[in-house]
Every structure is written in structure tokens, then in C-alpha cells.
Image (cartoon, rainbow, N blue to C red; front, top):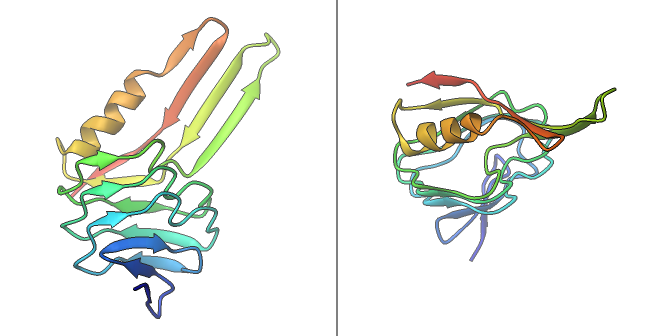
Length: 145
């Protein structure tokens, strides 16, 4: 059975299934093991997200559209990221040379250096560049905790 917390989080069986009504900095409570796909999708009032140790999965597009999101603190226990799980904003631009560039913006990622999340997001950044008239750039900053 789903439980709605005073801060707006909706949790069901240890999974945050909704957070679209949350405002400001949100600390997810202990006992949560996953963040569902699109859990915070398009929440423009969310500014920070702290996930507890024990969370192992962050679903696809979990914080997509959360343009005011400044940071996400990710525990070392996370071992699975869905597609664009921590991307907050996507932009596509065609320049004067008709080169298409896709830019993915991420909040400040607070994590342990060398953790799964650190390595996964650095691997994304390593793919940045141009090929066949298309480019991709991942705007990601880290703060190691």
C-alpha cells in the first residue's frame, strides 16, 4: 500500500514511486531501496535530493525535467541507473553549420569517488564528441563525499 509522506514523497514497498509534489531539498528516508522511473518527473520545485544508503536502483528519467534541481546525493549502494536516470534537462541545437548537438544537463552529483555512479557518469562523459554531423555533450559536475 502506498504511503504519502508530509514532504510529498509517495513510497510503496520501499520504492519512491512519486515525488512530483515535493518542494525544496528532499531527504529520502531510510528503508527506501529504489527510485521508480520518472518518480520526480517535471518537478520544477525540487532543489535537492538526498538518497539514503540502501538505495540500489534509480529508474529511468527519475529527475528529468527538474530544472531547479541543484544537487543529488547518491549513496555508494546504488548499482543500477536507468536510462538518463539523473539527467535533469535535455537540449537539442542545430548550429549554423547544420550540425546537431544534443546537450544533457545534470545536477551536481554528490557521490563517493570510484563508486558505480561516479564510473557510470564518467563513462557517459567519455562519449562526448561529434560524429556524422551529430554531437552529444553531458554537462556533469561531481562533488565527492
